[in-house]
Length: 110
Length: 117
Image: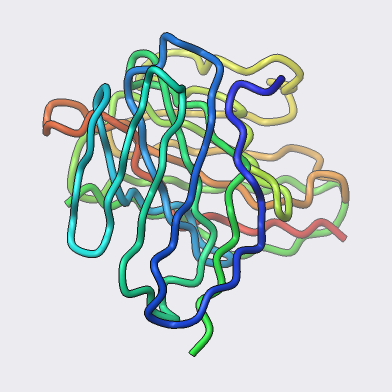
């Protein structure tokens, strides 16, 4: 079993839809949870950063962490074509070197 | 804030030549930078951790004589792919670790696409 599991997709949704992206993990020591967005041929861009459990909201993005289930989610409201990208979850025990998921490819079509 | 640049963004070279990639933190100092490799539709693979003023720490399976890393200042790390071969063709991404701003994490550069002919 990989430390971090993430469905690669692609996930295709119509513009305006609510998108749910998820990762599961096996290492109970993980305390720091991140979501990165990566456009094609570009480096990852930090979207959300969460320490321990709970929710965090930033504009149209909401990150949720459920440590008891070892499950994290990223929700995107009112999705736009410009949200089309690969979304990588990442997590670490010390906030230093994260373990990445393989990324989920999201396509938002007009 | 927390901007990281890489140069060049793309490079094509002949087999057997060496290629140097630069990674710069533009608006912060980074004692630690990281080098990753990414294959198409795959996640990031950590190659090495670059520490300013000391030798880099390489991940298992990464040849340190093949991938030379120099972290000469708090804002610059370089990766040199020596005697490049077609199998070295990949997307190389660096990151810089920013600590103390409430979001202690890595910030990534835009990546360098290396093609070895």
